[in-house]
Image (cartoon, rainbow, N blue to C red; front, side, top):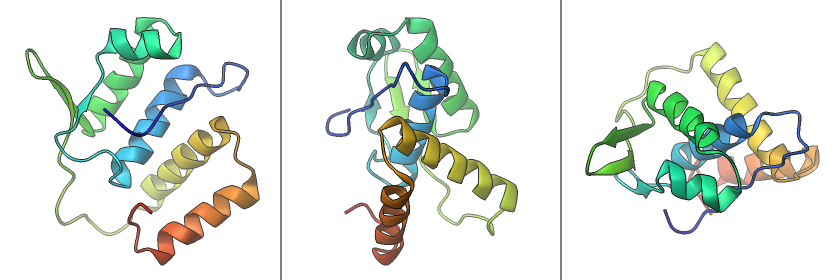
Length: 130
């Protein structure tokens, strides 16, 4: 994984594993992390963020459960392919994704106005990263 940098705010009420999970889910969902892109190992990401490997492992487990990433022995952890033809928007899933995004944005220190501006810009660009 090169490019996007994950940040964890240890003073946030959002647990570190959830901050990592939400940020990676947002990066995958927006295409900033492409299908097949390799993620750092649990140990490497934990060292980079100054966290325990168990914290990163929990985030990775939840991303695997959501089928956003795949881990294979010898091949590492990679971004999974997103469905080509998604089903109609599920209000509960949309609310969960919105919560993930806002939690990740708050962890980066974004204000409500900055978050709304980022969403408007993404919508104006057809959901593609700028």
